[in-house]
Length: 154
Image (cartoon, rainbow, N blue to C red; front, side, top):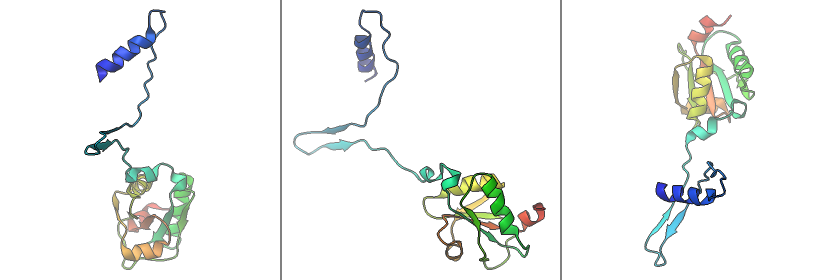
């Protein structure tokens, strides 16, 4: 195939002295026989990473997992300053006390959750738990702020 492309480029350049185009366009192809016995289609794959391209488009809920008043609002404000315009502090509180901040995500939003975690300096990222999902409303990424952020916040 490389030889065919090189030959085609040589033909395009011709003898007029024009430079051959160095830009190649790749298009998906479909190969099939007239019998229908063999049919191959080239597809582009999609992954969950496609959901995390723009922080402004990521729906983020911030829950306070501590006794520190206003902590979810402070973390939500930090996220908004970093481009997460849809970050919102919610009043729900997960059961038990959270020592470590965790970022949880709905299906297909792992990359978005990882980006939020990097933004906050959080290392724990996991799929969303059912109890957290009900507290997070329609958000696809939920931050549960733990005591580690309470100590670090002014």
